Amino acid sequence: MPLSALKLEQKRLLRFDGSMPRNKEYKGYLDHESGIGIRTYKDMVEEIMYLAAAKDRHFCSSYYKNLKDLIQLQTIY
Image (cartoon, rainbow, N blue to C red; front, side):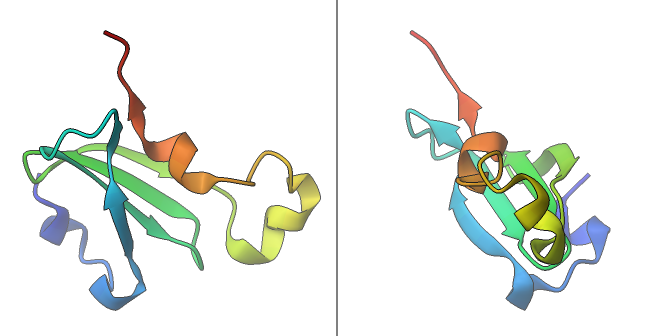
């Protein structure tokens, strides 16, 4: 499904590279407030994950240190 089908507030989404090394077909999105992370491939939702909401991350702050790393696809060549 396309990202728009999730009906998320676009202004709350932080957009970043969705893969490492960078592949322009992958995009990552993060809503810090709700804790929703999304990775798309060719503008279609590939993965949705729940990462603790911002208000709850202090319970395990070291795990949530870099949320982008949790969402990015790590490609090994």
